[in-house]
Length: 392
Image (cartoon, rainbow, N blue to C red; front, side, top):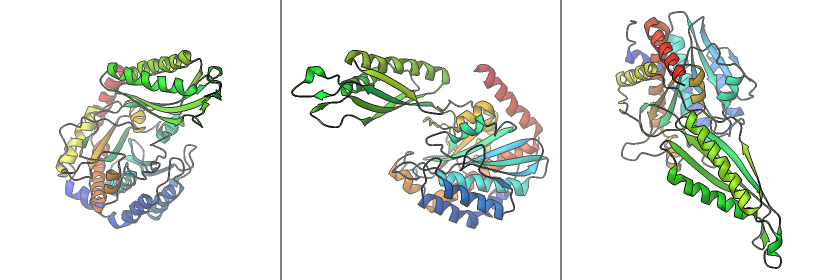
């Protein structure tokens, strides 16, 4: 068993990059960019890495705002993942500039302390909120040689991500026939009626939804004038489930509800999956335990269990590579704020959140270094991954 890496050394090494990374954090936070539009955020990170003497490849994997940086050589290969896209209207209410800071600090820390064969890789991964940049990179073979994947995410508490919700997104459209609502209502086929029945059907379905399932949607287009029977309506829906098998069952039922709403009103229905649905993740107990232990050694007081589950394209990475995700708290315990809220967006721009990201970086770096140095630990990680793969 390799010697335990000093928490003080990890913290001091990560803190060495504090003043370099603070302007990066502020710039990305104050200038939010949507998925696949993160040109400034990508450029700023790659410029910083090059200034540190790190070779960087960008664009990468066919994505204009993705990048790959690496230090060391040979096997094993470990990876961290920077995220930097924002949300429409809410800006950085998911705290992605903090993920960028933590990932860069962890990467540079491992590079400083790595004293055995191995390569640490930092991937810049765009469009986590919408298009699943990591999935596109997976398809491009970017992670084929990676042996261990480590990520982190700001949250309302500190702890280990025990599981993610698979998510699939759908555009739903209904096509009817327009007519004057007062003088010729019988001539119309009402696409808004179909949309209303869809939402009614989903509402009634929720009573029988299994534990671990979620469904939610919004109306994109509901008609143009009250005195015209709408000939076209559109909605956008998310389906989520805590397993990939359950997700498939939800998709079948949702398709039937859409079809039924069209049949009941005489409308033609169209259900279009949005690119890159996200998987439920494949937990790795060995990595999760190591992350928890490292967080405890750093004085981060990880929660015993985090009941809430999120959806992320990092889950798809864990389907292909052993991986784990550290949540780090950035909101006061007395005033916890959820992801994708104004309160969380405000918290992500405060100095305590930046310092929490550096602490998370030390945690990620410690586990990565253990993976490089400790053959028995690597074997345990791989064994857990094989067990989870067989179960799926």
